[in-house]
Length: 256
Image 1 (cartoon, rainbow, N blue to C red):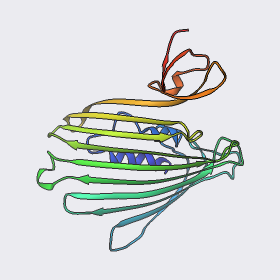
Image 2 (cartoon, one colour):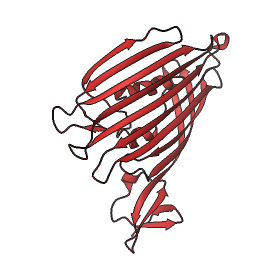
Image 3 (spheres, one colour):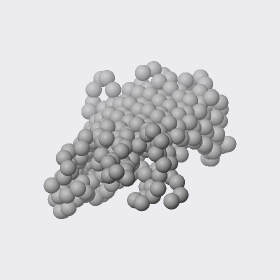
Image 4 (cartoon, rainbow, N blue to C red):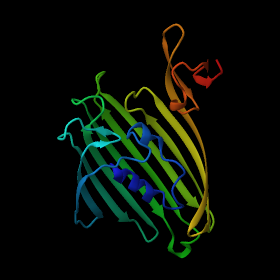
């Protein structure tokens, strides 16, 4: 995981170039839309076998980036990853993997976070029409267990994306995101995206993305009760003291 998360995302989306934004789960469970990067050491080894290309990686980091927060010099973060690759036929290949990360978090020196992921990517590119037809599909599942003063919080998140080459220079794709929050798993965010990409040349691209996102927040009502509602605004745009209108499970900002 760590920076490897972002690296694998870039590989997975290379059919028509990177997407305009990153999946919600990277912010909700990893703490940073760019993934997690830190200083440390990494060791990898190829596991020779007759079935597939298999690589095991072990990493040790300082533990001061995004998801993890060290309180002492000995509070290191640890990452393990197993990746497998295989050609199904001359036009199709699959890439599967699993990762595990462990480290201290910002809740206090006695609290840690465990993160486990599974990912799969399928690529299709027929040799006879390689410049006209190409497709890629990807999904990744995230499980987070975060220790904190109120008790352990177990959260889940995922995304699934696909992109298909509809012409020599045109690509059409989409992505679905679903993610709970690492600190409060009762809050869930969802998003759907449609993506259109045009390559004027091999050195430039024009990409448009339409995304519809619903964020869940907890409101304190006038009668001192609390209520979970969804909204189209990112939570950071709603501040304490803002006036809102609640209709069913939807929320809208209004002028005071």
